[in-house]
Length: 204
Image (cartoon, rainbow, N blue to C red):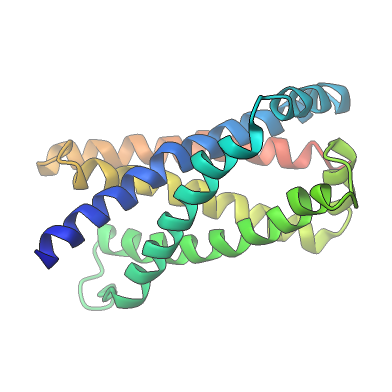
């Protein structure tokens, strides 16, 4: 019974990390990418997203609750998992290690980012627009923090997709898993370029 429950908890962990949390990351980055077209384009994209009906309900059900489960169970895995990178040293074991490291950093980054943007906006302290991010990124330390946070989140999603394919029995053999590695690392490169371009679009 316990093994069966753990099996399904891990499956749900990987599924919720991909959909809807991972999907939201991609949507969020595409909205941010509008900043490469200028301040007005970004503000229009944000305004359109903020005008969705029942937004707080959608965010709670589709983002915050799945993220809480994914993060909570992910921390549980991180603290009970044995990292055998020194003993074995093979590529996938190292990727397992970095998946846990980037997961913890990404969680800290998300908490800070939500506090600095959504919560400050809800408290009436800031406007949710281009200027908000431009002000944040005036500090070079914040640029570095956001850059590492962005790359950690994208790596965690990309490598998590590989784990999802394995846990759900989609890639079973060594050949399919090797091909999945190429695809997911390609995804990491493409999405990282989009995210980095979006990030630096807020810096004059």
